[in-house]
Image (cartoon, rainbow, N blue to C red):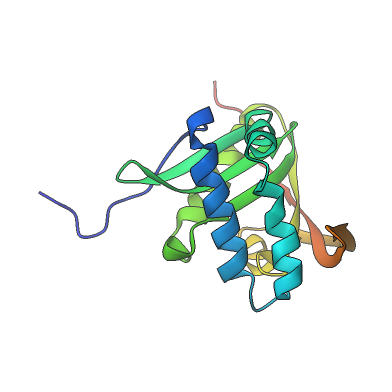
Length: 166
């Protein structure tokens, strides 16, 4: 029986995912961050995916999870090192449908199993409320420069359960 609303699934990043994840990255920034950042800021931010090889290397160099719906990628998140949630992006068509929460939960569980006591992220103004709802607490406000544009974001931290699965 077909489902009216397929459930998202998670899988590891594959090198062949890079072009589509770059498109998800750009679309997410262009559409979802429009209320919080200017067009010039969003273009400078999205330019991080312009060099496909560099973007693929960044994803491959981290623990990157891909969220899929019916087998098609719709979002991704990456863990840099033991405790830094570096990227979390979903396609605008699935925003608000639990894909971002599933990705975040997946990285939180993996980080905890690897012994991390906390996760830290630099949340965009767009994502700040999302992370706050998940238990992340603002630590400090930052100003960063990308492509000649200045951005505000917030370093947020979440304490993870110290329980390890046996």
